Length: 83
Image (tube, rainbow, N blue to C red):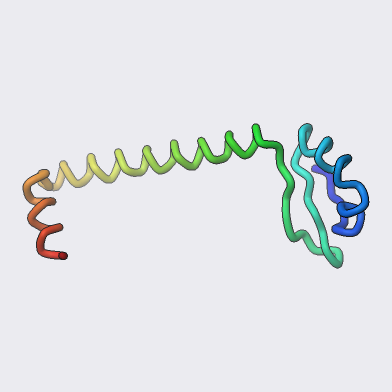
């Protein structure tokens, strides 16, 4: 992973964009990582993983709730008591 200072980033933004197409670029300020520049393809992949992980979690929770006897009717009753 490439690292670039914020000062160098300002002066070479185009080069940093090109580098981000190949690998994530860590941007530092005062020798401390503050941001990461990634390609849109990498961003889409990460966003897709988050959605997939959420969907898997929702399926798991739903299955456990069903195993414990939660039905759509019971869920509606619980939710109507909340509002």
